Amino acid sequence: MASQFGERLTVSIFGESHGTGIGVVIDGLPAGIPISESELLAFLARRRGGQSVCSTARAEADMPQIQSGVYEGKTTGSPLCAVITNQDTRSKDYVAVYDTPRPSHADYTAYCKWGGASDFRGGGHFSGRLTASLCIAGGIAKQILAQDEIAVGAHLAQVGHVVEDAFPLYPTKELFAEIAAKPFPVINDQDGERMQQEIMQARSELDSVGGIIECAAIGIPAGWGDPMFDGMENRLSRVLFGIPAVKGVEFGGGFAMAAMRGSAVNDPFCITKDGTVATVTNYSGGIQGGITNGMPLRFRVAMKPTPSIAQPQQTVSLSRMEETTLALKGRHDPCVAHRAVPVVEAATALVLLDSLLIAQGEQNV
Image 1 (cartoon, rainbow, N blue to C red):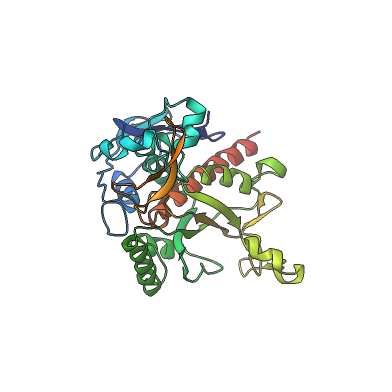
Image 2 (image 1 turned 135 degrees about the horizontal axis):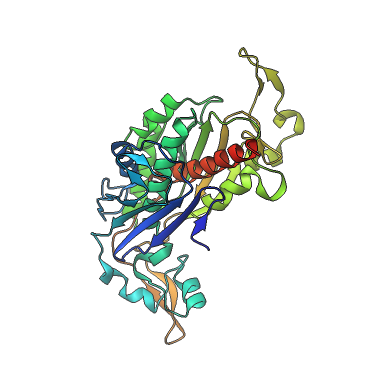
């Protein structure tokens, strides 16, 4: 099923942007794990729109109603189902979209696949609105991983041409928490101000801008993942590409290594003060041969500019089969990258929790 992923921990996302609600079903959670509602709500608030001129004006409360799987604050071991009611919809903004698909949106491909039967309002099931569901599951996964001293964090590494410094070789959970507490998710606030100016410049020109998110995870032992088609890169990429607007994922040194030599990007092994094996550098991003090597997991995600812009754009009328022009109205993000930072964390946490459960199952065989 396209809206489901995971092996030991399965996650299923449902709903449409302008439907009654959205939600998630998580199956495979261990029983007896305490879940902090306040911590989960704080995590969801980081993704929520309507809080800044740099994001959409659509203001949803994003208050999840947990239907099953949690009793007296702890997981029960049964499937956890959570639902968020959509409250601030404005479907009239999308009347024209049914006949004139928006450039670089999924309107046309959905029309071709389902013959016009899909819910096109606000992008329907393709909408970034559904990342709130992913964040419910990911927020819970982060809490469970924390009990094993595994932490996931991310920051906005680039918006347009504005770039900030990367994570250090060994990022800390304190650094992750510091970034998460900020209204704009960057390491350097001055760089963040320049990024916001870039976003507002695009908005003033009825345009949009893309960005890059850097994500890291610490506390992961060596040995997770498998070679070839079930490596950690494979597992993560499948879920990360399920986030709307993601167009690229690179691990460690990524594409830049194509212009470098092996002597520069090979990660020399060393023995730490704690007597464990590590590497002096981390161009591998914590993964070699599809298997974690004990170093921090590091990767970057490229987000395309929001395709919903107010400038006139060329499209076609599907009913008349002729070219026409579309100027979009409505509430749209001039940049989605900053709101996607916790979404990338959520996707990563879910894959890591699934990998943890797989590793525990292998140890018990």
